[in-house]
Length: 197
Image 1 (cartoon, rainbow, N blue to C red):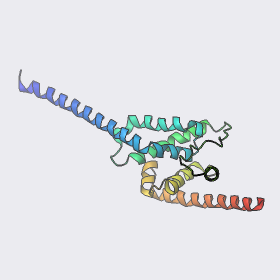
Image 2 (image 1 turned 90 degrees about the vertical axis):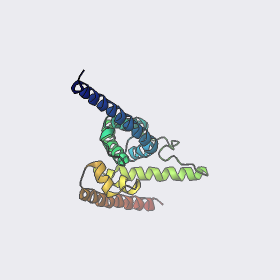
Image 3 (image 1 turned 180 degrees about the vertical axis):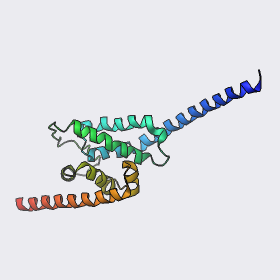
Image 4 (image 1 turned 90 degrees about the horizontal axis):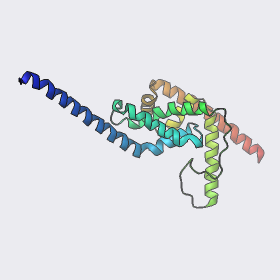
């Protein structure tokens, strides 16, 4: 058998091995990203308004989507990619549950998995969480997403722009408008609370 025939066969084998190695590397990266960022993705989905009953499923959906696309994710940009995917999953989930009447369980502390020293601390923390969610619920989706990513998750304008695939100027503009609306809603709530006391 001539070398001209053997060489293409070896090249094809090397390419197959390289593809297998790349796939294993991507699976390892995804596994590491899931271990590291699952709590962040879960909390982010909740803050985007995904109902408590659906947050676990939505978080799993984010990682199921990632399985098929993770080879395209630049190393170091895993969290940004997962948050961008979470925005789209949250949008679908919120539309799906828009007509349902969802009542929060007052004993459900999953919104913020924190250990409290006293029952009073737990009640106060749950009340703060309910107020925050109420204020966020009043923001349009595009403003809410940027506000949560920047103000709560601590992401930079650059990483938000990358995750949402929008210009940095658009992120800054949405963030400014979100802050204005959030502060206005907070001032109204505080005024109402003072009037009740």
